[in-house]
Image (cartoon, rainbow, N blue to C red; front, side, top):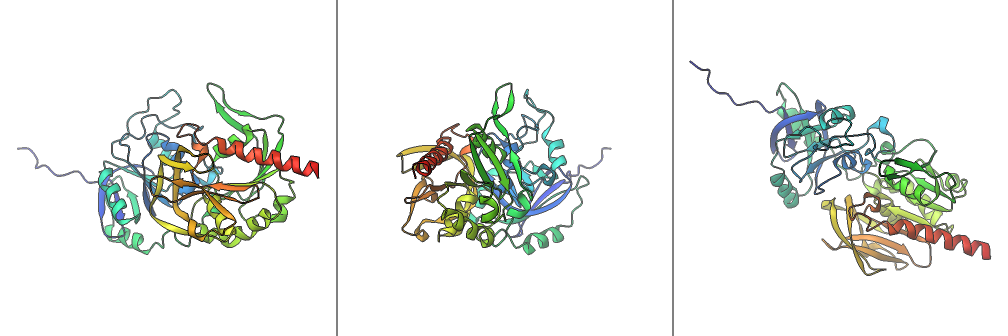
Length: 395
């Protein structure tokens, strides 16, 4: 006589703060992690997404069902300080992770997730979870993986409900490098990997709030020697490097919290006339330094298919987005012009200061979703530097 059938225990849970419990199969690191659940609509680039420091304290739900089929490698990691493994704390997948099938793969996604301490769950109805986020906003949650299927569900729910969330949380100092260093690696080339610029023509100081490597690579590719400084570096420390331009990086957390120490420095730098370019968190911090406000978004923007219009050219570009806070355009002073806007929901995606070489964008031009629709922004930055140089020489 056969044994009665018993259902298989789930080996992973996603426990939302509202009490919703989603069961699935655990992969990646064992244990649990608390964070804010968002969804990302990108079809490719999962390794770049999971290592983007802007995703610190977030659990990423991938709407594309097949994640992991191209494996993982060391070249597609984006966080600057890999020993900190800064990035998403959790991941949610629809399908079981398959064996890698790509010539660049150095291993499977499961082992790679374990190496970074990322807890993941597969077998989830990600369409239903995405619909829930769209309706109710990005929830706080705990993701847990236990191979034996034994969980203290009450304790996980309590942890999800007790976590304060991202509002008011400064994460830049956790995501950024704590030391000053020089970046020399250039853009990736087919079959040659990442190059290096041997004769830089510019010095760019990048204030690291949790920067992505590819931003630094593209600036290096424009002939720049990039000096990376910590997020709490003073204006005097930054200007001591005699920068031709200053870059405000992306990063995680609530921009209003980071702005407590970053905004006064940015405001002082803007008064020097040195060209300034900001991306993502850097864009939000620039807006705050100029007198604007930021606000928490309902579901955020996370994906590589977002249409954004550049009012300065009249063109629409397809961009990569990753942010849960946005600049309130109504709060910007009259000296600040809105240059870009999302065609999904009309939120602000760019600004510039009238009469000054200072501008920023909310999206990620280095992420190549277009694939190069937004690369002109780096050229715009270096054009402003050339103009500033010429003005100083004429004087």
